[in-house]
Structure formats: C-alpha cells, structure tokens
Length: 489
Ligand code: FAD
Ligand code: NAD
Image (cartoon, rainbow, N blue to C red; front, side, top):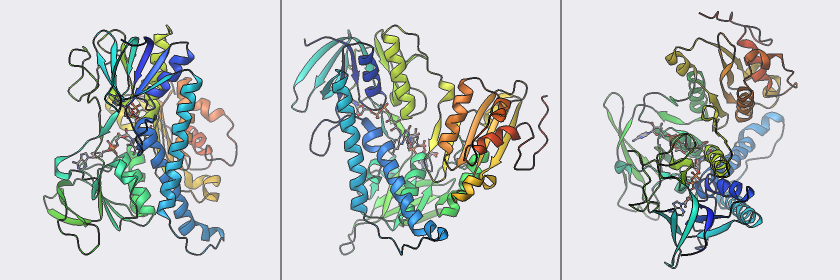
C-alpha cells in the first residue's frame, strides 16, 4: 500500500482538475490520476475539453471566422486585401500550440498547489482505495479519505456509420482534417454538428447536415431556433431534418491517388431513400458517460441505465466518501457545469455547505452568430403552466451591432407575469454568450425585468439589446414598436 491522500481525483478534465485545485487550496492532500497521453506518449491533463473539445474547436472557429471576415466582410469596410489564401497546417499548428500552452498551465497549477499528478489508469476499489496502472503496467494502490470520479464522456457511435478515423470520423477527427473536404456530411445537427460544420463550411466545404429529428435545436427557445435555422441556411449549411441515416460506407476502391469517399444513405420524412457521396463524414449524435476500467465490480458505486454514475444533488455517490462529477453524471455535458461541481464537492469535503444552482447553467453554441441561453424557454413555461411575459429585441435596431456588421438575431427575456422575476434569457447574435451571462447574474440575484430596465446600459453596446428586451417585457422598449404587455391571468 502506498502513501495515503485526503483526496484522489480520477480524471483531469475541467471537472477533475478544478476539483483537485480547489481541494488543494482548502489544505487537503490531493492527487489527480489521468490516463490521457499525447502523440509522444507523455501524460497530459485537461481531458476532452482542452485536448479535443472546447478549446481546439474554439481555436478553429476563431480562425475560420477570421477567414470569412477576410474573404467576405472586409471589402464593405473599404479594406481591399485581395483573395486571402488558406494554410490549414498553420491553422492546426496554432490550435495545437494553444492546447500545449494550456496543458502546461494545468501542470504549473498542480505543482504550485502541491497536487500530485499520477499518470495512468485509475480504478476505484472497495474501502476507498484507488489502483493506478501506469504506462509500463506498474500497479500502485493508494488509500484516500475521499475519491472524486471525473472520467468524463466519449462520443456515441452508431452502427450504421461506424467511424474509421479517416473517412468517417467523430468530433476529434473533425478537428484534425489535413485539408478542407470538398463535400462534408455531418450526422446530427446538435452543438458539435453546427460548430464544426461552421468551421469547415467557412473554410470552403460544401456541408450537408443530416438530422433525425423533425425540429431544429428543439431544446432551445423556439424563437431562437427559428432564427438560427434561417441564419445558418443563409450561411450555406444544408440542414436536412427528419432524415434517418441507413448506412455510411467508405468506398472500396481508391480512384487514382484520391482519398476514398464515403457513400451515405438516408431516408427522409416521406420515406424516400437518398444516396450522397462525401469526402468526409462527421458523426456527432451525442456523447455518453465514460467509465471503462473505472469501477471495480465490487466497489459499490451504482450507475443508471445510461451508464451515468448515480449521485445526489451534491454529487455524492451511493458509497460514502466517493463523489462523481462532470459528464460522468446527470445534467448537461458542459465544461463549466463539471468545474462548478468540482468546486462544490471540494468545499463539501472540507466541511462547507456549497450548493450549485443547477437551474442557472448557461448554454452556448459558438457559431457565428453565437446562440446562448439560461433559465427556462418559453415552451417550458407554457408546458409548466407558468403565467409569463416575453420581451424581445432585434440586433437590427442596435447601433453598435450595425457598426460591427452584426445586425442579425435577437435577445429574448422571459419573466414571471406576477412577480416580474426573470425566468429565462435567450439570445442569438453578437456577444450572445456575454449578454446571457449578464442575464444569469441578474437571475442569480433575483432581479426582475423592471430592475434590468431601470439600469443604465452604456451606449453604444451590444448589451443594449438585453436592456431593450427587458423594457419590451413591459411594453416600453424605446427603439422598437411595442406589443401591449400581457396582463397576468
Ligand atoms: P472530460 O473532459 O472528458 O475528462 C475526463 C478525463 O478523465 C479524461 O482526460 C480521461 O482521459 C480521464 N479518464 C477517464 N477514465 C480514467 C481512468 N480510469 N483513469 C484515469 N483517467 C481517466 N463544453 C462547454 O462547456 N463548452 C464548449 O465550448 C464545449 N465544446 C466542446 C467541443 C467538442 C468538440 C466536444 C467534444 C465537447 C465540448 N464541450 C464543451 C463539452 C466538454 O468538453 C465536456 O463537457 C467536458 O470536457 C467534461 O468534463 P469532464 O471533466 O467531466 O470530462
Ligand atoms: P447533441 O446532443 O448536441 O446533438 C446530437 C444531435 O444528433 C441531436 O440533434 C440528435 O437529434 C441528433 N441525432 C442523434 N442520433 C442521430 C442519428 N442516428 N441520425 C441523425 N441525427 C441524430 O450532441 P453533440 O453535438 O454530439 O455534442 C455532444 C455534447 O457535447 C453536447 O450535448 C454538449 O453537451 C457538448 N458540447 C458542448 C458544446 C458547447 O457547449 N458549445 C460544444 C460541443 C459539444
């Protein structure tokens, strides 16, 4: 038996590494186990989010957006640059350097906080012990007072479109294309389909997105998803709803030196069959919790039918002293949700009474324009029978948005018809994520639409759209015609 820790965290994604840092800050002797290795076989921290998720996708979204600005938008400002060229290898190199820098940042934080980084696969044993198997197959068992499981999630694969890492890829493969595919097929019009579809479409790919559901972004407020659908189609994303993929096969024969294409078949809502050829296909149909090798059969931790480790509102599992956080447990699969669970669990272990507010976790899709939401959608309030008011305001009437050439989209505010408490803030448009975060702060402090309306917002800012939407909920937006406010029933 090896050294004993107060806390061992298994997994160093945004849930696990944040939990480890907060534990160490609170004076707990902490180790963090991680099995991820880079191309050279070195252990690295950061998990999905840093290595193949949030950060690389945002790096490519930024680069591809700048390409669009250079090719399409600068001329309108009177800036003549000629046709810009593309260097994908350099774009990828920039992305990889950002990842490496942040990998180093976590290592530095671990060292500075006195956290022991253990590289290897961790398995939870009974009696609060963790066995770690390193790259050489060496096994070491560590006892701990508390263990935090944070092993994250992996992409869902579908048998009709098995990934081969070349023609048919998951999101990780889609962050590594060596060149722009001429025709790109995407299965699933969710967050990844839209973000990575936008990246490659901006860089010149002809993108077709096949979505099984009949509704586009059904979990978003419907006014926002309708607007998003309009904008994305205008941008050239060919989104085919209500279509079921029946097979996707990488073609057998290589035609000359050309890479093999993928033949994708799908059935549409009228039961008609279609066949399309693509240079690449991305499968982005959701993610599932990952617990392979994490739990010894007699460790006592229970999982639900979807493989999520069962936890209560404070992330305690069914075994005392064992906690689970992040994508491994219920709730939205978002980095910031996992990080805040990590902080909550660390503080609870240290005897504090921290509780995460699961009702106010913002959700952002980093397309251009961005889509963001916090709180309830109008369809949820209607289904719950909550008497509510809505205030919407278009960016087309916001001076700052027009000067930025960002006049598409809107902000929508939902309030309780009696108390005027803010119940939801939704946006599609410039800086939508930042505006919705302002809404989240207001909601966390119990603000009303009237409170927001009475505040002074700097002019000219994008935030004025939030101000005006709050005023519109009471029928007195200044820069648009108002509908009479709904009276409480
Ligand atoms: P992970 O980040 O998956 O980390 C789990 C870690 O545990 C991994 O490093 C894994 O190697 C390790 N591990 C697993 N089992 C073991 C074991 N037995 N022993 C040792 N180590 C183990 N979310 C956002 O909020 N914003 C975004 O913009 C965003 N963009 C995304 C883009 C893409 C393309 C993808 C795929 C995801 C994106 N996400 C985004 C989701 C986000 O990445 C996840 O919600 C987040 O990474 C979950 O954090 P986690 O710590 O729970 O798990
Ligand atoms: P998703 O759940 O967002 O979307 C999956 C889509 O695929 C859905 O619209 C679903 O109806 C569709 N689908 C499912 N099976 C299908 C099939 N057989 N054929 C056609 N369509 C099918 O999942 P995702 O886009 O893979 O992303 C996974 C998770 O990663 C997200 O849920 C999110 O939590 C996280 N993520 C977040 C961000 C962000 O916060 N900006 C970015 C990327 C990923």
